Length: 196
Image (tube, rainbow, N blue to C red):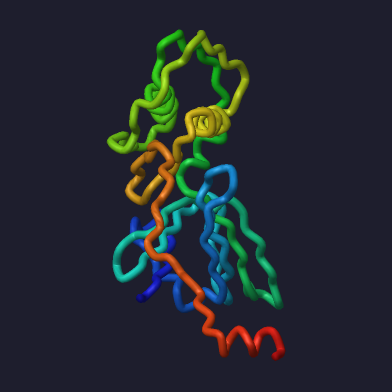
């Protein structure tokens, strides 16, 4: 398994390999649903708003936008640059919305409606319908991302932005056991545990 960290250079419209300058990297899904990538580069820099992607054996596993950086300098050049990247769902955090959804509106339709707030093309093929509203829902002065997360929580659905800007809104499913581990003690082993 080979991991490659790349940053998008908008001046040249190319992806630049940052793997050799990366000294730490951690990917996780935050409790509120955003996928996050934390890392640190040495003698290299990235900028807030820059696109980042993580590839595993040439398959894109994560894409997102740098949300914050922490640069440390020694002398004239950068010593290190820490960064925090969130998946593209973070773009919906800047949209404050006012909406009225009528009784019978499906959860998936709400997600699709809010997904269209961004000017970037979003693939909505991963959005399922979900439950319907039992009464009208008026939304005032709320961040679109908070509303999307609320809909996902209320319906027990996953809300993720997959690489390629594919919006994923599907029911959470409880997995089944793949294997069962059973510890078997023989009488000799039990005697040793009892100190006999």
